Length: 416
Image 1 (cartoon, one colour):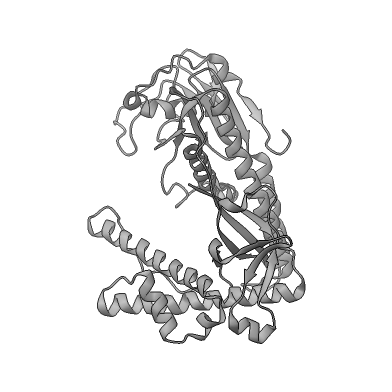
Image 2: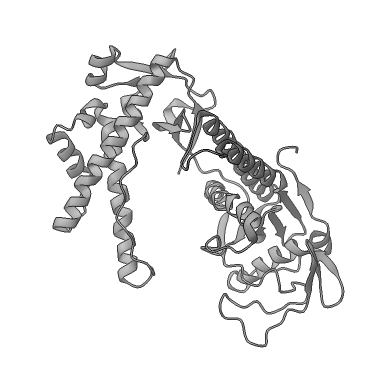
């Protein structure tokens, strides 16, 4: 199991120019390697392996390949092989009828910058920092054979497997890939946390041990709205495709805030599970739910720009680290059905013609049951998400308390 940590690179203009050159050459190497891989597939119906791509790039004396340090150029070629391997697996799914649309081969990258990767065995940790080697061509042109990156104080050098240089919005980041050891935590598989996602209530979490909380999403939505407004103001009266340094800075700031929100929200969920010995998480998720969303112009913008899929992936990563079982289930009719009235929960597309919920969502955030009990609407949905899998997993939901359904704790991740 691997983790990664990104650190903004603060370099002199000369070193930054070299890094930019390496990333531009990496982008060209990717396209050259992809051209070879595509031609082998189109003409010979062969999916090339890593050795074949690297050998071809080396034998053809590719100028871009020679301009990079050999191991980093090979890592770029490996990215092409991984893309073609994914395409191969998608083709298999399509041919067996498990995928509706026929997949397309990987596309060429647009002119620009691409990631530069260095396996740790070619790097050296010095008292001044991590020595990043450069190729002979760079040494001849720039008169420098290496440069230094700062080593994060919270990481152990022996656990690092790879160092990547990521270009993003006219900034460069050093990404440290390191091995993460699984942590032994005392958990109870009979305890479960159901998660319903939304916009204002980003995550609504209810457990079968009487706890509940809501991760507030209003501030994140506000950040996206402010970002969209600033971008619109900068692009007003400009030609289509206009971009500037100011827009890059705005975008990078917004992306950092989003990453911070994802990490804090995921950690909040995991810490709650560890503190209460919860051994399972059930996450309600409908695949392709953002495709063709019809929530209005503003609603679509808010819904689509909230990175819930990335948050779900981050929670899943942390679950594997601590031994928490992560279960993803479809969430159709969980918002309409009444948990307290034990309404039948149909699967997506299988709702009976005469199906009607016992309760009703009377207004935003408030659900009325058949016996005129008022509970939080999203908490009702979260518990119904657990019900979707309770029979299969043998879960007991008698521990869901009325307090958990009516007064969940609201957590504001940037102020808590």
